[in-house]
Every structure is written in structure tokens, then in C-alpha cells.
Length: 171
Image (tube, rainbow, N blue to C red; front, side, top):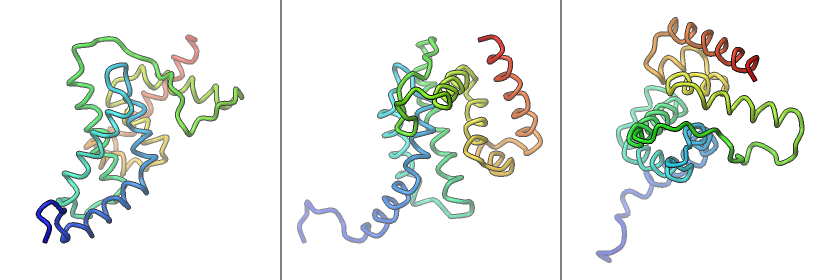
């Protein structure tokens, strides 16, 4: 046995983990993208989320959906990462292009950019909730991911929508 080669026993776990990451890669990028700032780049956040997923993977008991588990870790990782960088108080608008936004300047693309700029102005929890809502997660799933009650999720979503409408009118 070569002492420098990785242990063979972990290969199935590693392959399973890589398969999960590949399947949910876009979800992870979307969460990271919303928390990107000048000091917390998309690459840094993505790498931190993958590291935390890898550390937590052996303890994942499959009591919830894989997507719920990934969202929870990704959101918590991004929020923690931002808190570490909190000594820089500026808010940086979402200006970088994501691969899921097309380069062409059509009306829908511009509306999406405007929506994400407004979402970026929300607080951390509100940003997380609206992201999950836009990902078509049920109130129950959002509740499970964020730790809020379903009623609280519904109330917060209503208030977030009102905030976004108000921001839209002010532009």
C-alpha cells in the first residue's frame, strides 16, 4: 500500500458527495451569488460552502431532503462569512453577470437584474427567505431551512414583497 495515496474506503463516500455537489451546483452558486460582496467573492463563498458541506456530509442523516440540507448549510455559511467581513459596512449591489442571466439586453433580463439589486438591499434573513421563495420552496421547506415557524415565514414573505414593491416604486 502506498502511504501517499488516499484511503480506498472513502472513495464511495467521496463519489456520492461529488455527485450531490454536481446535482446541486447551480443552487449553491445562486445562494453564494446573492451574498457576494467586494470582500466576499463568489469563488470564496462557493469554496467555503463546499468545504462545510464536505465536513457535514458524514453526519447527514437524510432526515430531510438533500436540497433542504444544502440550502441550510449554504445560507448559514454565507451569512457567517459575511459576518466575519462585517467590519466593512458598505453594501455592494449585485452587478456581476451570473451564467443563468443572459448577456442580451432584453426586458426580462433587465427586470431580473433590477430584482436582484433590490434583493441585495434586504437584510440577511429576508434575503435568504426570498431566495428560497424564488426557488419555489414551500413555506414548510423554508421554515425547515431557516428555523422559523411556517406562520413567521408567511408573515415575513408578505413584508418582504411589500418592501420590494416599495423599492420598485421609489426607483
